[in-house]
Length: 156
Picture 1 (cartoon, rainbow, N blue to C red):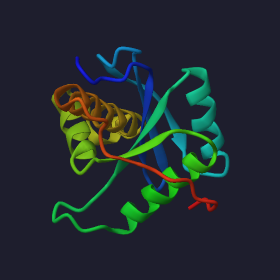
Picture 2: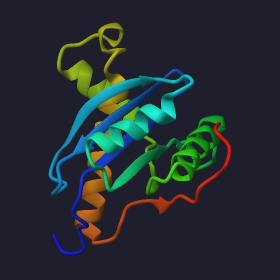
Picture 3: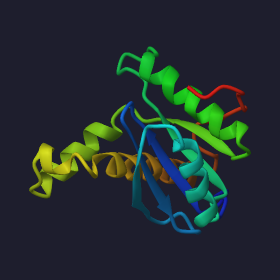
């Protein structure tokens, strides 16, 4: 575990309608679902309250890049949301999450859930996937995942 920075982290999967939130233990062994936050006024405050509740040292926000590697409107939206979280005083890192939602749907289907019955938790599962991938990258490389985010004064 050389180079791993201890502390609880929150995984944040930003969507247009909902935001999935996951957390890990202090040692970064396992990411677990926390909550689905509606994408509406007050969403930043709710994420901040969760960060405070879990004493999170960092927020890991998924950056949805197209499989081709190009940025999309969703990429800009997630980047803006991450910058707003940073502006609110949180340490934030953006990590590539190209396949987290696909992996989440696949895992839920594998557990026997239909897409319709999974709608309420798929965002949390996607947040678990992206956070677990980030933890695994840090543990295997000894380097923090993704890139740090500088604060912005605008909410997306």
